[in-house]
Every structure is written in C-alpha cells, then in structure tokens.
Length: 220
Image (cartoon, one colour):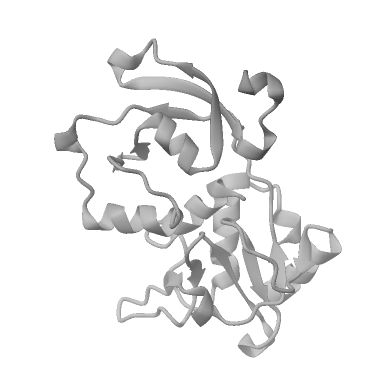
C-alpha cells in the first residue's frame, strides 16, 4: 500500500494550490503525484486520463483491473466514457479522491471524495511504491484534555485510515499525535526497537517492520 500517496490525495481535496475547476481530473492527480514524487512520473502523464493510463500500462507500471483487492494509494483509471478522455482518481482506503463535475458546487470546486460504488467501473490500476522509509517515527499522546478530535480532523483521519482505530489521536499542524506502539500496530507493523530517551520532550523513536516481514532475529 502507498499511505503517502493516499494521504496526499486526501489532503489535496481541500488544500490550496490544487486545481478546482471541473474537467481537470488528470491535472489534479498529476499535482498529487508531483507533491510526492516531484517529476519522477512526468513522462507518463499525458493530455488525458485515458492516454495516461495506456502510458502506465505500456511502461509496466499499471495493470488491467480484474476485481483484485484495492490498497490505499491505488490510482484508478477509467478508459471508457467521459467524452473519450477517460477519468482518474486516487483510492484513499475508504473513498476515491478526485476532481469531477460530480462534486462541482456553486463555488466551482470540483474536488471531492466519492464512494467506490459511486465511482463506477474502472479499467486500469496503477500502484506505485510508497516513498516513505520503513522506519516509523512517532510522538507520545498528549494529556487527556488535549485528545479531543474536532469534526473536520475526525473526518480527515477516517478518510485516510478507515480500518484504523487510534484512541487519543489528534492532529496539530501537519503532525498526527497518537500513542506510538498502538499506532504502529494499527498500521500492521511490529515494533522491533523502541527508544523513549526523549520522552520528556514528547517524542519517542521506533523502528518497525511489516508484520509479515518480521524475522526470527527481530522476534527475539
């Protein structure tokens, strides 16, 4: 899964700087990719979603979708319909982040989330490698009186991590604060090294690996 791309897509729905006008689904996703990978995938981004889908396919970076399970960060291309231009959005784990006339409001903002069932059939799936390192750095949870989640933040977390329960979590600025070990476990990782020497500063460091990749040495 690509949590970094999923998070960038979820943020792009409300973050300034991303195209708001309807009809620019391709540009919207290109901006998301550039925020994570800079110009790495620029050679594959073409004039329309349909042509871009085939560019990824031809490069071996995409596959024909045949009902396989989706993962956060998957890029979903429609090559049929949409006036022959196709359509594209990013699966965040619970919804598709996209630019579409489906969301266009009186303020002309066409960005939004759509349930997969409403998104409809798509033909090409692109799954890029998460650029984040395997090492996870976290922060201790704050005192109970600081743990309240406002409505907007709760929606943001649920959109990114629908199957993750993070008791006591909250966002301050660009940082998610949550109990370290519980958070790491919720994302399917196993803590193999824990350092709380800076706990008095509200910070601890952990090294974690995916549960399926834990070696016998790590388990000891």
